[in-house]
Image (cartoon, rainbow, N blue to C red):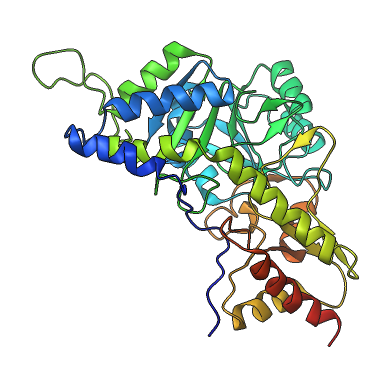
Length: 371
């Protein structure tokens, strides 16, 4: 069988930056949470995205959880959240015993629809917070979302797990809201194997997040806890990998863009093919190259054809309001997210792919149109 082509797998730097920082952690015996790598990763990531402060955590999910806690979300509160996302965006709302209300997407961005958001505000005027997601590295239309949240005096959290390295009108995603979160899971544009980061210009709140994330240990000689805490801090070894990966982020974005443009050039003219929207105000990181199909060839045809040749692909996220666990919660919108799910497919977008790999993928897909 031909070599496996992955959807998006870890890609360590050719220069070995990650090894240097991890070796330093071993050489100094700073293996457990906290240490120079953690402190520097927070500082370097915050500087990279243009935020005043950051907290390195065990996952992007942990970052969303503590962001919700930091803006005061608690039992019975309502939180607006896009329906077209991964469940990790929504689960922390349930952790806080709050109630998610799912908002539809629009075709212009594939992200939260500003009109549907306004409809939701009319229906739920006492909402506590809004979470937006920058899906597949495409930024949400943030001007409209920020304006709505300010008008209704509601906290805004950005799930930028998929969009590190992406910009909206020249400003990095994850820096428009009260808090922004990034993920370094194994499939993200840079990875620490697992981990996340919470960023904010509210430095005192980030300091409080670090406190909660280290089991809420009070300043005392003995172990004393006056608040509920969590074991959410990133380890010094993992942070070392992150520092090395951050050095090659721009290279990874460049390669992701190259992959997207290759696919669009080779496949964009096929009947029924439409690629994810790139707006003039949007400078994406192109995390996953995704397209929708409206002709005789369906997403399952593409995925099965690629799977037979040992090539990984996947559907667009299944909307949360269609998920068995979340279907009991309210949904505001029409059928945009459902259509994107039913008609969408994510193509292999691994930054280690060669031109030969890309040509192999394209040839298989084109064959479905010219059998």
